[in-house]
Length: 96
Image (cartoon, rainbow, N blue to C red; front, side, top):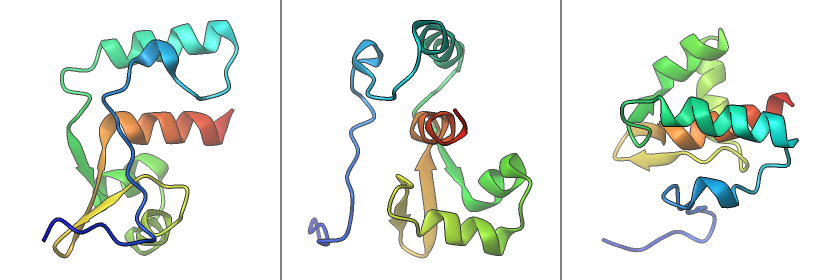
């Protein structure tokens, strides 16, 4: 039951934000860290529908995003989820 498939990527979102591996300038990194600190629960899991709304794409396209290798999502049963902090880091990395 606790097996991890070979193609599954496990991302530890509890790492120290000061050691964030996203390549940002000092100003961008400080801005990102301050934004994450303001979140009530950065470890909240968001759904495909919420990601689709945020990216302003359809749910079918959002499912394609969730299946990408560089997107840190998890599949729980038949539902795809992503940790909010992982999503923010991914989105920041992709947009800068």
